[in-house]
Length: 448
Image 1 (tube, rainbow, N blue to C red):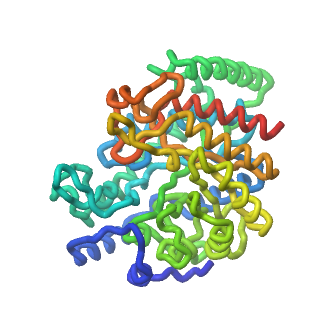
Image 2 (tube, one colour):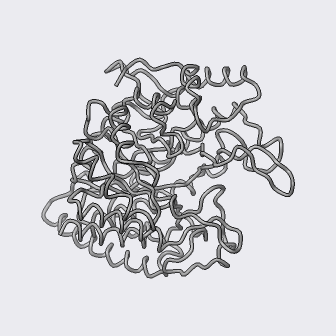
Image 3 (tube, helix red, strand yellow):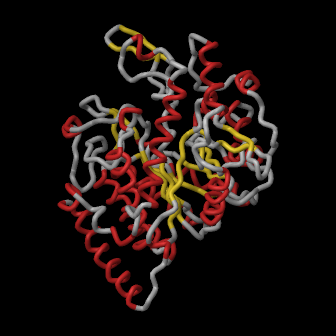
């Protein structure tokens, strides 16, 4: 990896995909300059710590749980929303750790997930055509000409929203909320009445007994009182990511200090494109999405470009095939990449390949399809003798109705009850716990 970061103009000259067209270049330059002077949101040493954990994932010694919103909004940066997301991730991690008997690396899809790639630059409603909504860091969701104009002032808004979110997360995970002795208090309100919530309560009671035993013999490990929790997002908007890239004083190498882990999306992974060129210079642990069009040669070439030193923990391939394609498409990819000696963690994104429009007009996903893709991911890795390293889930800590199925049996008509996502449908809290228990069973079978 080169330590000399190309400038923003050089990246744009490569024909950067999925970027907005700002009407006022001077305003962009002014806001990017202001962003460059802002303090880092994360520290290089924290990124190195996560890279070491991801190396354990790549060796089959740990499992990654990555979860959060498909697209964060500025409006939802509140203590309640952040706590609710963190709470369900903590519950899922406890389920996977206890029932799956494996260390779990916890990675939030938060504090930076403000830009989204879109299939079209424009959106038409009722004969009116406006720029597509590309996330709060770029423009507004309201379907008005004013809201949809890309606004560079939002770069600073995204920074401030991310800073507030990370501040809350750090306060929760170090201030006692993440203490394993709080395992019952995380299971509140509507969740307790669900089958998954009741199963969680039974498991929490077992954990309580284990903790009581440890206390009785004088073992009171500090690790039980706090958790390591890291942030991640798709590093899509080059103005934001480049401005948040700093030279580390210890190593004199560039780190993206807007998040611990950043990834390249399926639409921006062109080998000679701007995003791959940017990513190959930063020292963070990074991910790259691979969909059904990705070949093994593509993956090997990307690994050579993004991780030329073949450093363990540096690169994660996040596969997003769809339930109907993963068993056919993934084996050759994993087999050839493994045979090439590439050091990589394999993670399953079971969300993005399973989206469709319901008969009631909502963008949705079937819970059964999500689970089937994860099962296919595990089946392929088990057959090949490789390690299914983790899952990336779009979820929320709230009682939304955006995905069909699960124990609550949400149907297409029920989507209208509480559909709140501005882009993609998310699993609600009960569905997220159900998924965690099912994945824990898959992990147990893999380790058997």
